[in-house]
Length: 119
Image 1 (cartoon, rainbow, N blue to C red):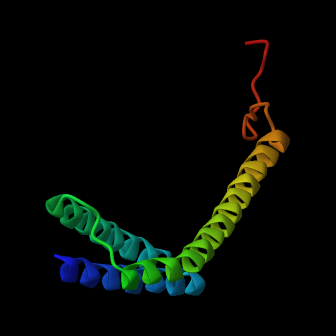
Image 2 (tube, rainbow, N blue to C red):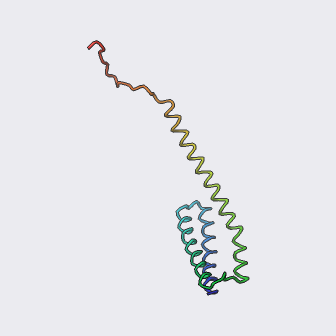
Image 3 (cartoon, one colour):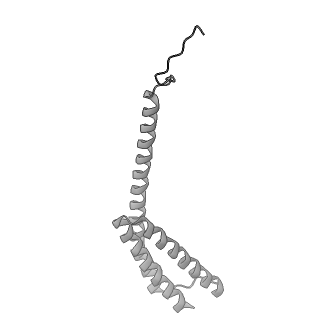
C-alpha cells in the first residue's frame, strides 16, 4: 500500500507543477481539468490511508510534501491575482452599464410622429 501511495503522491506532484505552468500560461481550462485530476488523486490517497487504518508516510513522502509548499503558495498567489483581475473587470462592466443608463433619455420619444391634441 505504501508503494501505491508513493505513486499517487508522485502523480500529485506532477499535477501540481502542471497546474502552476498552466496558470502562468493563462490556460484556465487546462488548470481546472488538472485541478479535478488532482482532487481525484487526493481522494485515492485518502482511501489508501483509510484501508491501512493509519496515515501511510515515509521520509521521502514528507520531503516531497515539503517541496510542494512553495509551489502551492505560488498557485495561491496567481489565483488571487486572477480573482482581483476578474473583480476589476466586473466592476468596470457594471460602471459602464450604470453610466449608459444614467445618460439615456428616460422620456419616450414618439419617433417623429406628431399627434393632434384637439382630436
